Structures are given as C-alpha cells and as structure tokens.
Length: 178
Image 1 (tube, one colour):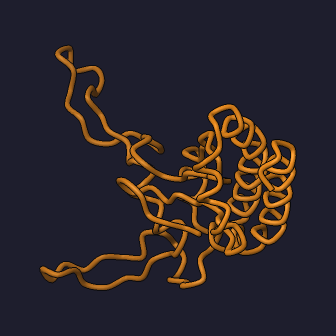
Image 2: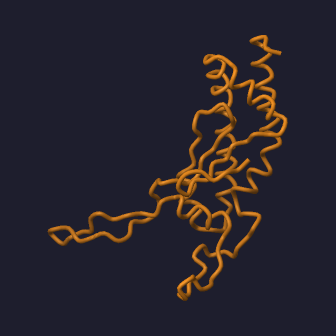
C-alpha cells in the first residue's frame, strides 16, 4: 500500500490483504521476536528499494535521479521504503553574497519531497490560481499510472508479499504461536 506521509514523503509499505489478520499477531509478539521479524523484513525492503532504483533509472523525468537520492529503508516489521522528504537534492539556488562578495552563502536546494510527485506523475503546462502561466516543469506529460514508483511497486509486490508471508509464518511457527 502506498501512502503519503510527512512533508512530501511517499512511504511505501507492503501490507497484503492476507497479512491483515497477522498484524494483530505481530503486535502481540515479544520484543525479541519482533526484532527478528525486523531483521528478516529489512532485506526485502532493500530489494524493493533496488527495484525502485532500477525503474527510476529508466524514468523520462530528469528530476527522478535527484529524488532517488532520498530513498531509504527504515528498519520495520513490514516491508518499507521511504522516498522524498526534506533531504536537499539538486543544484543550489538563491542565497546572498558573502561579505567578500566572491561567493554565494546560505543557498538552498530543493527538498526531494518537492520534486517527488512531478517525478512520478509528470506535469502539464497551464495557468495557476492567480493567472500566471507555467510550463511543463518535469519535461514529460502527466501520466496517472506513474513513471517509476507505481510501476515498480505494482510489478514487485506479489513476489515480495509471498516471501514476507513465508517469513512471518516460519517465525511464528518457530515460537509455537500457531
């Protein structure tokens, strides 16, 4: 399931329908067992992140490469990949001249979260709410099915879900809860 979370972060948590009954079981397990589940889920999260990088490398939006720098895999009981957020990516802009006047200081770079949705869904030119014309900032047209995140998640989720279910079943059987 893909959810929005925080400031411009696209958090991907795979929670198949078959696992919904097991989530309450995961909550009832002791801390050591939950730590083992986290250890087992982390490689799956890293593989999903690898798939996202692979799909992102073939994305036609140039900002995708910048957004890919923000991909992280927090240690969690579920398969989880976070994309976007406040991490500064891309070239610096703005700022002010230093006291010597030789270089710029206090420059900013765009946060990955600000580029996330355009890198995934593209953009279109038009007119904003106060009448200013804007151009196609992400170089490709709007695509509701996404360019890299959604296709990667859709293609890889069935395999990941099956592996994750097996991991949970084997751990729960091992501790004698089933």
